[in-house]
Each structure stands twice: as structure tokens, then as C-alpha cells.
Length: 249
Image (cartoon, rainbow, N blue to C red; front, top):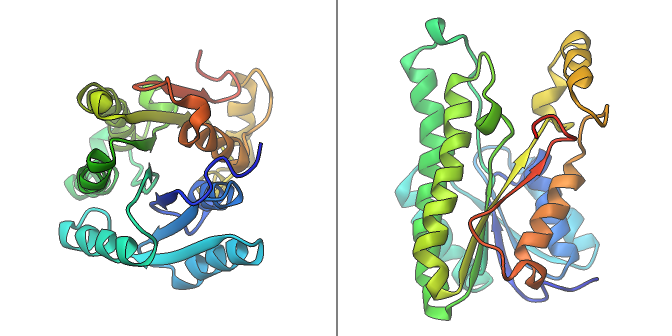
């Protein structure tokens, strides 16, 4: 099915690379007008925008740190002026600051919590004005398998990804009566810049634990987000789609 999201306005945070980039391109392929959020890499964001436009889609870039309230407010105002009210929000922006718990610096904890959780909170709160007025909206939060299984060396990151699930369920309960669906996607180990830095030995060890014996593709996650953003999932809210190759069952 194509054009399931024709003329819907979608904001994807952290969309200049990896999973966010794939999501933005996939939403545009289904006809959505995509707002590409990023915080630092101008060239990468422009490249995503150009890919979408060359394929006949509509996209604009918006530079903003999702954990800074004033920047989030300005970003939404600019999106509303250029594209219209956001009807699909994908909270994808996130960072890692990995370390063993006993060595983890308070700054490493604070930074990850600030971007991964506060960022999702600020964007979700800001998007509600338009969604509640329209009595319709799709919010999709990107969690992770480690939010369910835990992961040594990712005490902070795992905490935020587990927190995203609690946020998803709470928002679904609050917003369902207004026609707003809130769901999450929990990727396993996906081929991205984050996993590219892993050694072959580490990758092989994870591969042994994955029944499908392969890392996921960014397109796998993007396809799940398209489903959640589309009318095909209109009777789903408060749920998490697990895409991990069987790593966590």
C-alpha cells in the first residue's frame, strides 16, 4: 500500500542519520510531509531532505536540541508555519554515554537522561495542542531491547529506554479518549553507526544469542513506524513492537 500518509505532517527527531533517517524517508515515501529534526550535523540533515525531495516527497529541516524547551517551542512554531500542525510525532532522538556503573560519571547519567527522556517529554507535550484540537494523532516512541533486557555498561541508556515504555503507556491512557494513539518500537541490534563501532568479537557474541542470526536493518524499524503511523494500526495504543530477531522474547 502506498500513500497511506498522504499530506500528513510528520516530525522525526534525530532524523539526520541511522534509524531516524530511514524513518523519515519511509514516512515521506508514504506521502507524509516530513519535518527532519537534528541537533548538529547540517550536511547530513540536508542530505536526508534532498533524498526525500528527489523521490518526489516533501521535507524540511529543523535544527533544535530536543532537551531545550525554547528550541523545541521554536521548532514546532516553524514546522506549523511551513508544513502545518504535526499529526505524527516520532521521538527517535537519543544518545549513549556507555560506562560501567561504578565508573559512570554523574554527567554521563545526566546527559543521557536529559536527551532521551526530557527530549521525548518536551516534544510530546508540545505536539498535544494541535493533536487534541484535531482529536487525532500518532505518537511513536523509539525504545530499545535493552530497556527490557538490560545491558551491562548501559545503566543510563537502559534506564531511559525502559522509561520510554512507561511514558508510552501513561500517555496512551491519558490521550486515548482524544483520538491520539501512542505506541513504541523496541529495536534490537540494528546496523547503524552505534553498532558499527562494536568489535567483530562482540558482534559475533550477540549473533549467537539472536535466533535469526543477523543484525536488523534500519528499514525494519522504519517499516514498523510506518505501520504505527498509518490507519492500519488505528486500534492499537500503549503497545510496543519488538524487532530484535528473537534476542528478547
